[in-house]
View (cartoon, each protein chain N blue to C red):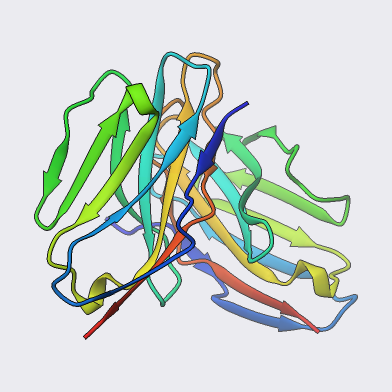
Amino acid sequence: AQKVTQAQTEISVVEKEDVTLDCVYETRDTTYYLFWYKQPPSGELVFLIRRNSFDEQNEISGRYSWNFQKSTSSFNFTITASQVVDSAVYFCALSGGSSNTGKLIFGQGTTLQVKP
Amino acid sequence: DAGVIQSPRHEVTEMGQEVTLRCKPISGHDYLFWYRQTMMRGLELLIYFNNNVPIDDSGMPEDRFSAKMPNASFSTLKIQPSEPRDSAVYFCASSGGFLGETQYFGPGTRLLVL
């Protein structure tokens, strides 16, 4: 069975601090895809990144970076120099490939509060 | 290009009434998904369509829920009769493929059943 665990329910930081959101996944697929979505207070779900299981290169996009480690089944998300606008719920999600299961399995989400 | 469009954005209704949620996927996307988000259960997939055909409705909670996709640019999710426990945010998403393709979400419909 596929599963995504986001152990951190809530994180509170002060603006300009760095923060890492953890994501651990379980799958028996050899091919799979990992995603991060952001849900700001307005409620929409915003796609942030997609990564396939064959690409373990870390990725950086501005203040955002992602660390994918197959050895520990983790796909962590770091925000550098956090800002108040980063306050949101962040979801990690998994989609299996080789088992033909393209459904998105979401973690429970991590609520990030960035205080000024 | 326009993203996924959902209507209404907010719906308040009384128990027993019929509720219809609407979705327009991104043009060219041939997969459409309906999700429900609640505090207790998080984000859960209700049903998805490929080329307007329902493929997997195993997430639909009960017979009171039904979904249709009469054409490539329109889908509905209907609840009849509605119950207070149906109160949730309902998201529609679309993607250009299934395995590993990114799903793009609409703004959601916040449903409150009194």
